[in-house]
Image 1 (cartoon, one colour):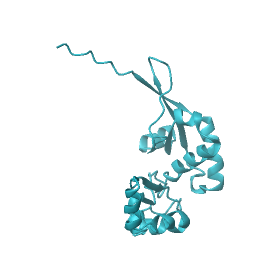
Image 2 (tube, rainbow, N blue to C red; image 1 turned 90 degrees about the vertical axis):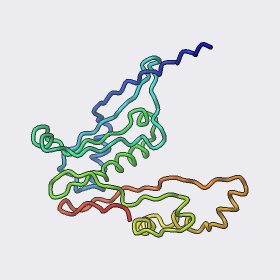
Image 3 (tube, rainbow, N blue to C red; image 1 turned 135 degrees about the horizontal axis):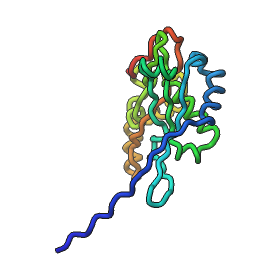
Amino acid sequence: MMRKARTPKPKIVIKHAVSKDMKEIAQDLIGDLCGVLKDVPIEYILKTRTNSDTGKSVDPKVGECLGPVQAANAVDRDIHKRGFRVILSGNWWEKATKEDRRAAVHYQLCRCAPVNGKPTVAKPDFVGFESNVRHFGCWTDSLKGAQKVMPQQLTLLGEDTPAAETKKRGRGGNAAHVDVAQPHQHQAASGAASPPPG
C-alpha cells in the first residue's frame, strides 16, 4: 500500500518593521498614563507573518497579538540608545480598532519597568483562571488586588458556587479555563518591579 505524499507546509515569511502609528499612540499614552517612561528610548515594532505560497497574511492565534517586550542589554543602551523593544502582531494590528490598538500598546508599556535606570520587563500584577475564581473567589493576594480594580467582574465570577457550576455542566455547559491577566501599573523609576502573582 502506497503512502500518500505529505502536503508540504506553507513557508511563513516573518517581517519586522518599525511602526510610526504605534509610536504615536505610545507617546500619547506615556504623556497621560506612563510618565515614568517619558525619557526612556523605546523601539516600536510590528511583526507580520505571510504565507509565501498565497501571499496572504497569517492571522495570529488567540492571545498572540501581544508580542514580546525586550529590555535592552548594555550594548543596546550604550550604542543604539535603546531602552526597550516593544513588539505587536502586524496582522492583528491591521484589523484592530483604534481602542484595541491603544489597549495593546498600553499593556506593552506596562511591561516596561525601568528600575534604578536599568530596563526591566515586569510581570503582570495578577494571573488567574476563570473556573478557579468561579469556585473559590478571589483567594490570592494578586486576585484580591485585581478585585479592587474591577470589582464587578470578579465579584460576579466569585458568586458562582460549585453547585451552580455543576448545574451548568448538567445543561451541557463546560467550565471555562481561561487566563485572566491585567498589566501592572508603573511605579517610580527608582522603585522595585512588581513581585510575581500571589
